[in-house]
Amino acid sequence: MTEAITPRFEQKTQSLSGKIHYSIAMPQPENHLFEVSLHLSNYSEEYLDLKLPVWTPGSYLVREYARHLQNFTALAGDKSLEWYKVSKNHWQVKTNNIKNVLIRYQIFANELTVRTNHLDRSHGYFNGAAIFFRISQLDKQEIYVTVQPPRSDWKVTTGLSQVVEQDNTFVAADYDTLVDSPFEVGTHQLHHFQVMEKPHELAIWGKGNFQIQSMITDMKKIIEVEAKIFDGLPYERYVFLLHLSIKASGGLEHKNSTALIYQRFGFRDRTKYERFMQLVAHEFFHLWNVKRIRPKGLEVFDYDQENYTPSLWFCEGTTSYYDLIIPFRAGIYDAKVYLENLSVSLSLVRSSPFLLRRSP
Image (cartoon, rainbow, N blue to C red; front, side):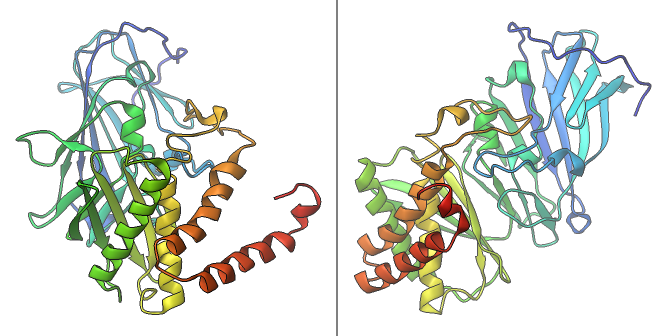
């Protein structure tokens, strides 16, 4: 840290302008460190406030992503700028009306989940909330991201739109969109398919016992069933990011993509395969329920603290009901299997002590 400066309250100026461009490098992926550079041009204020979210939408527990940030520096050309850490997730830089500012830092990434970052010699995966600073005065502006893979055979897959004629450079309409668009970087399998004349991508990291054509065929059925419920697909392109692990399972929904993690050998056993399709149905249903239809308490995200709402029973509970019935409607399993799955869910509810306090 350079010499401390006296922190000021975050500025509320609405007339700010500036171009935001992130560069993400990973020159030694085996060290689990993302090298992040934030280039801010045409900035015109005395102070720059930078905040890293403490949680990510869709995963409602506070994660304290700032604990993985290290080696923060602020520069104007070759000159170091004074900065101060105001709180656990808030850095303030004294810019003195300097128009071009460069912020550099590292993010340690060695936790493979759908809500965190992971980097090793086989791939890189990162979530926006866990790696990108929020500049509150500029969070409605476009944000550019350039990814610099460590090797020429690594590719980049994300739900963001690519900037024309610029390699591995993408643009987000605003900060909320950036946070809502995870990145997969590496030598992953990438499969393209169409549903209702719209392009879809399935990126798979890791090896497993899946049969790709059967998987894509059933995923297309789920998409079609859910599109029928909501009268169409509300995106121009959709990306599935699938990580195969030893025993993990889970998912995190995004506005035009989803991140999934599942057992690498969980596809040949019929029951385990059906659970995977329920996971796909669940996260894809969130495309509407919570991403586009959400409780008042989550209408505007507060990235600095917990976001309270009594309505998660609708966001998650209703979605869990549909993740059982949608594969049945899609013909992936029959009524007997559906009712068996439903009976398991009912048994869990009936055996829960919470049932004495609130009805399902």
